[in-house]
Amino acid sequence: MTSFRRVLSPQARDISLVEGPRLAVIPYCFIRFRLKREKAYLFACITDDGIQRILKIMQKSSPEMKLKGIY
Image (cartoon, rainbow, N blue to C red; front, top):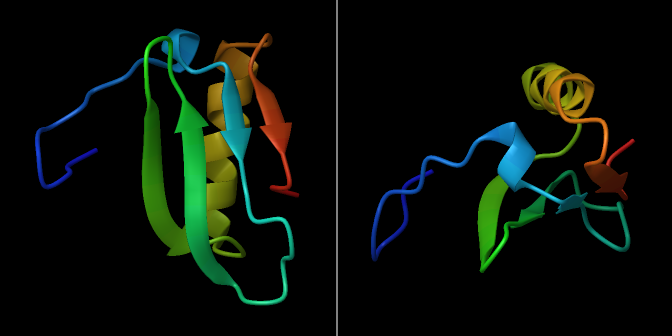
């Protein structure tokens, strides 16, 4: 993940929560990743198959990670 301030390379085990939009009316939104000490945001199309597959793989590798508002 690249931001204006720095580059983050979190592992799936470092992410405790992945949260999508509250109202999924618009397909493009910010996806929030809650890390141990901070939050990271990704602007993406929530209905994209690639993003969905990546999130499913992340959840399989880290079963304690919660997905909220994604599916």
